[in-house]
Amino acid sequence: MPRLFAPLLALSLLLLACGAQASYITRTLNKPVPGGVAVVDLGPASTAPNARFDGKPVLVVKEQDNWLAIVGIPLTQKPGTAVLSQGGRSLPFTVGSKKYPEQRITLKNTRQVNPNPADLKRIEGELAEQIKAYRSFSPALPSNLILDKPVNGPLSSKFGVRRFFNGEERNPHAGLDFAVPAGTPIKTPANGKVILVGDYFFNGRTVFVDHGQGFISMFCHMSKIDVAVGQALRRGEVVGRVGSTGRATGPHMHWNVSLNDARVDPAIFIGAFQP
Image (cartoon, rainbow, N blue to C red; front, side, top):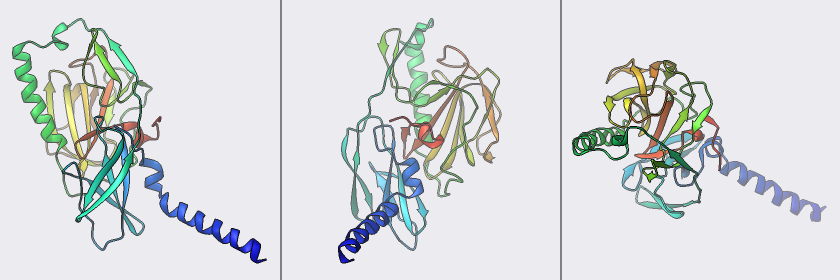
């Protein structure tokens, strides 16, 4: 009996430890690669801890008795050890590697590949507006972390793809593209507040929605915007219509998700992530 009891006890302890480590949020969202998400256990506390990554505040949620940091990992992050700071503590986590595919696109409008000086001045101002929106950090918690698809349709371009326009490499694809017809309603995947609308050189008609604590959705290339800055939205409300404005080769819905000012793969939040 003692010979059987020891292995059974060890197995029980191992299963308990595994269960404690693999919370629902961790199992669902923890994809710690460049362009992914790291879920870092902050332990129990009577009030919500403050955590930062690369000097920027991080979304913190409570699951059962533990607080968890939901950390956006930028595409530029090198694989290896990264460090989250919280209350004077340094909490290391490991970033794995991920290879993203290439995409080659031909554009008839060469100014959308090599903008002229006037375009560059416009782009600089528009970029500043959008960076400010991405860095917004409101205190409210998101209504949901598992997001709805903003439209129902097949993916036409994945996150992180290295893009070559007319043979010249530009920034990687920072969101997901859905192949849906022009005019299709785009719905917000969680409660939020509209923090920016605009008609931009590259993005076309664009809407930013703040879901809370630096968790932000951006929709662009829209044909029509149906919301205004400051408007509160409930999950599933329409923000606009699919189009092909800006640098687009045809109608589609482009959706960015940002955490702590890092653009991350929206596929993580809709159960479609591929390692």
